[in-house]
Length: 132
Image (tube, rainbow, N blue to C red):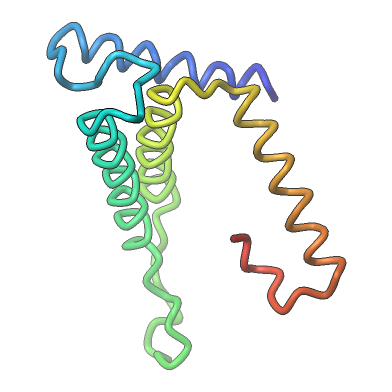
């Protein structure tokens, strides 16, 4: 599994390098200095592009309104939904790459957060769906 995550990081770095060869302003050199305004702007812009892709994925989920009875038979295109989710992940991976975060650091942070939310669940937190 970690090889797959590492592979995803490597593919994103390769893509970012290729884009930078065509347009050096497309991504700043990484890891970025977060104290610089232009780097924070680049991180913010890239993150917002990922959020936009998440919204595009959400557009494929049209049968979620409990008050609508006329939408029981909605055709869901799993492939298109997954493609939008991958687009979002690509932008989020780019942000991580720009910050100098690798697969090991991401995985460690993931495990730390997972442990925290499991503790909340075991301690009868109000909502097990609130991961913040």
